[in-house]
Image (tube, rainbow over all chains, first blue to last red; front, top):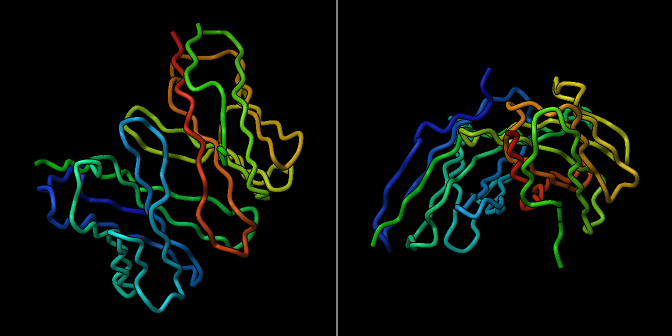
Length: 117
Length: 114
């Protein structure tokens, strides 16, 4: 069963506007972490933001915020005031660290964001 | 100060050859991983090591053999390379399992098998 679903293969946003990238997840474990990574055209994986399953508040990091809706099992990334440099692939990922032998990040298929002037 | 470094960044080789990709992390993390990103950008775990011990092997062909000489290094050796092995391979590391923190990735190695 797919654990992480990103339904938007591509998104466009105008510079300075906000954009939401969708992510839903599936787990029966009460303890998990949700992550967003950015992959620009240069190829590296850049960590953006983290949300723990027990966190009461939505995570924020600068222009990035995570809209965490636990009951809906969604963890959408919101980028405010988009910049041209935000154009990249964005991956949602989940970690279920129940034990050492299951510790891994499971990735969604990614959303390609393009910011235009 | 590179946190997770892998070499080489690009690797072009012929079918049937054997090649290695090296990875080192200076973060003091206990767990290291290898991920494969295919041509459709899908990222999937291959292996994870915790303190030099193999923890996860996600049905990867045995032509792929990870080696961890110490907890700061996790190298990937690939025997008898095939065209389908062409991909970007990422090394990553993270803190111990109890602390659910992010994984830090290397810059990736783009492997092209011709």
